[in-house]
Length: 257
Image (cartoon, rainbow, N blue to C red; front, side, top):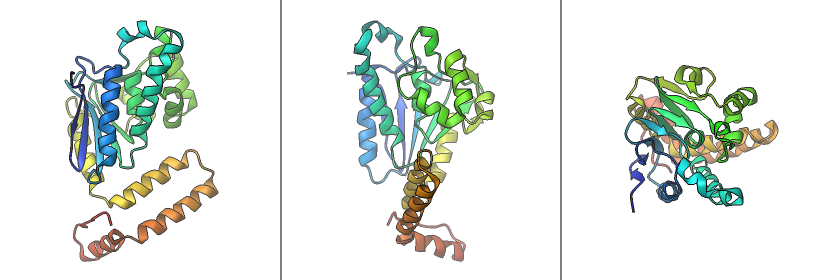
């Protein structure tokens, strides 16, 4: 079996999509991505995750169109349900995630990137959801996650018109976090991941969970969750270490306890 997803383990783990030339999402790639995410979720040493595509031409150019011939009618649910479950795995990882978008992120590729907490693109990157040009609709979270990131009006423009944005436009509307020179997306993502990994791991997990809840939770309920989270964090040794390191003017040595 061809290896379409590579896992580079470490505190800053990398998940590499490798389905040349454009790293398209096939059923087999999705299954391998599920296995990789399962390993990451079970590894207590992971502090941050980077997702990127091999080859430099694309992060991921969307679904494998060759598979569309076999997806007529309800059969498509098999593919889309699998993608929904796997993409949700990525979105629900408790550690911060960074998509390094070297080249294009289109269709299912952009839907995958939207599951990450941060998206770093290069100047030549194109980001879009062209599904309607093919007579189909986004089916792996695009109609739901994109409006939550850039707002409903801009999401309708991207999806209903189907035209891609360049990196500058994507940055202006908050679709990407940063834009870097061509060939620098992975290095920039690694630098960001190292910074994220240096923070208190318990506090990081709690903060990410609270932020994700904020999109769906009434303010007063969210504030109550925030208080509970703060109590959890302040009960850790890391909270004492953070204060001690600050007062001693030295880097903190967090242990996750």
